Image 1 (cartoon, one colour):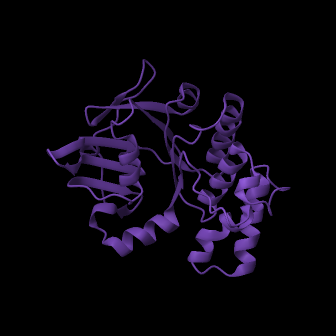
Image 2 (cartoon, helix red, strand yellow):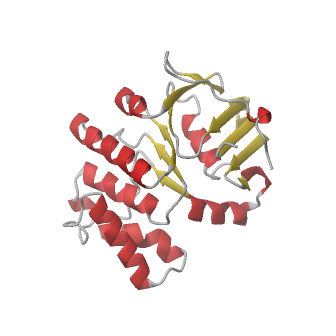
Length: 240
């Protein structure tokens, strides 16, 4: 059974002129340990799909299963708890808290979860060292470069030890060289931590570094390019 299984997903937004359908009868299956790129034109719903997978957005119809958890059957509290413990997010804009240091920003998810001080400090320090920021632990975001800020954001996404990493244009605001460094870092961490990763990107280099690439168009996913593999209809898979 796939680690990520989405079947018949419909998602729309209310507008002044009526419902705007973004995702329509969408299917997706991702094997545990796979890194999948989602590409497509701006505004087609790539970020919306990530938000649905991570439990940030509700949807009108369909089934979304992450591991043993079925997102569409959860109430709001259960979705928040699941997201905080099983999903790591990296966004295009790092969303670091400017008044806190790098290590404090990384600690924040553990602080909110009530993890003891010594443990959260140790985990945050270890992750910042791992992403190459051992000399920047006490620096606030305003004193860090764009690439360093995004590395802090990656460390923060991983501090709760998630099984699923969702990244939305993680290199969108970086120059070419810095983006290439972050590509390598994401791939390395994905492999070492045995993550399942879904990465929305316009960057063809990052998409090519993934195990496969899917294009979102017309509300559905299709293989991207000759090497892409089609998303599997999850109703053909064994389910518990």
